[in-house]
Amino acid sequence: MIHFVGGETGAWRVTELKAVTGESLAVVSHVEIMESNSIVTTSGLWTLRGFSSNIRYANKSEKEKLVAVQQGLGRPEATCAALIPIRKSDAWWLLAQDERRAIFEEQSHHTSIGLQYLPAIARKLYHCRDIGEPFDFLTWFEYASAHTNAFEDLVGKLRETLEWKYVDREIDIRLMRI
Image (cartoon, rainbow, N blue to C red):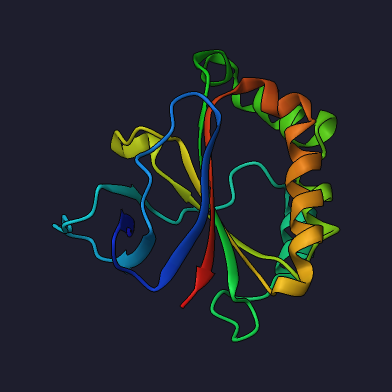
C-alpha cells in the first residue's frame, strides 16, 4: 500500500497543485510518500492511498512493450514528478470490461501514447477504487527537468482522448525532489 501524504514536510516540494476537473485538494507545500500496509497516521492535511495491481487494460503485447522500455522510479536525474489522482464517472464503471478496454486503447490509444514518452518518463499506477478512497487511480510520474515539455505533451494528449470524457475529478500536483 502506498500513502501520499500532503502537508508541510516531505521529500517532494509541491510546485503547483490545481484541480483540472472537479473539487481540488487542500493546498500543501510538500508530499511524503510512505509504503505501509497499515493505516498511516500523520499530521498531513490529506492522505491518498492506493495499491499496485496487475495491468488491467493492456494486452500481452502492449505489456511486453511497456516492460521492455519502462525505467524504474527513483532515478537520480528524475527530480521532477507529478501526482495525478483521477476519478472516473459512474458511466465509465457501468461499462463492461471489454467496452472500457476499447475506449482505453482502441479509441484513445492510451498505451500507445504513453510508449512514445518512455523511457524518459517513468510512471506507476496505483488503484484505490477498490479500497473506498475518493479517487479511482493515483498516477505517479517521475522525469528529469529536461523532459518537462515532453511530460506536458504526454498529459495534453491523454486529456484530449475519449477516455478523458469519463474523468469527473482530476487533480494535477507537480513536485520537485528536495
